[in-house]
Length: 150
Image (cartoon, rainbow, N blue to C red; front, side):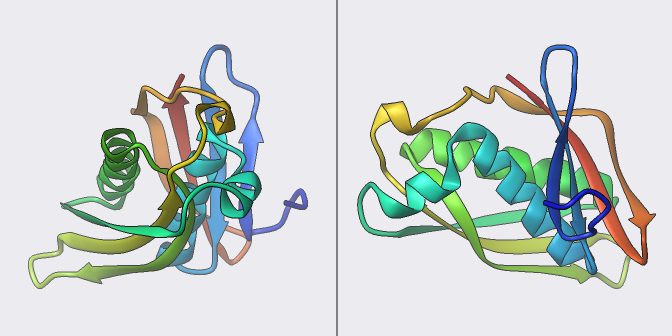
């Protein structure tokens, strides 16, 4: 990603964990890019796409009263599904966020992954931290920041 661009994601130095900022013109795009940053931390998503078994799709569902908590739940659920099913995700096929009448949010995302050799992995992500997770306006779009516990 080009520095200053609102598209994609960018990693930042962190004392012990992995910190990133994901960008998008919409909340859905920022969330999708945050998921890609998570996936690329776990394994080289370009390598996963080229190797491994055929594509496997998984659905992530999340709901919350705040967008920050919705992001945390989305990333944590994606991490849990990948761990439980032995999948390395490399793409977000679709992601939709609905604002409900009571002001809460509901998310449905379709992830694309593969089973792959263990040496495909980069880092073992243990969880998604709620510490300093935020979503802010950035250059006419949005930036979502997160820290991954590795």
